[in-house]
Amino acid sequence: AQSVTQLGSHVSVSEGALVLLRCNYSSSVPPYLFWYVQYPNQGLQLLLKYTSAATLVKGINGFEAEFKKSETSFHLTKPSAHMSDAAEYFCAVSVNRDDKIIFGKGTRLHILP
Amino acid sequence: DADVTQTPRNRITKTGKRIMLECSQTKGHDRMYWYRQDPGLGLRLIYYSFDVKDINKGEISDGYSVSRQAQAKFSLSLESAIPNQTALYFCATSESGTADYGYTFGSGTRLTVV
Image (cartoon, rainbow over all chains, first blue to last red; front, side):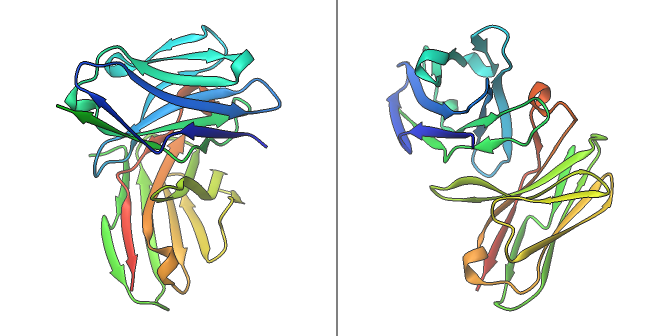
């Protein structure tokens, strides 16, 4: 069965520093991969998705993620953290175009002034 | 108005009570989902529906039931609430070809069972 593992339930970075949130997936077939963001007291919103086109995917708010099949990874990065990036981030996977999405346990990103 | 509306936003109920959480959407999507979110556990799928006549259990359906009253409405019921059902509940919708578009989420219902 497909799954995703997010490394680190909490990550702290200084404002202006690189953001790196790690996600590894497990899937027997080429997966569809997603990153969602949840701001306080809100629902989740789609940040970006990988659907077998370009391996480097650009999303909203300056985030991007790179699909690496050899490492079964889909890490999320942003060159320079902003205070408004403080939120919880979820990596997610689907094994085919029409299937439900399975979510990871989430990583809470803290931005230090 | 929001694309996906969940009511109520917050609810406190007593152990043993029946409670219904409601979800309605204006996206015109066929697919609807109920997830619960617990700290450190992420989102876990309770039930999902790919159309009005199609209802499927997710990974944690015990103690829950659902009703798809129309394409736009999908309700989640707790027949006899227990404290470990205290959680944040999310409804989501998608088109067929889910991976192309992802989900649209509601704002959530925070349920406390005392």
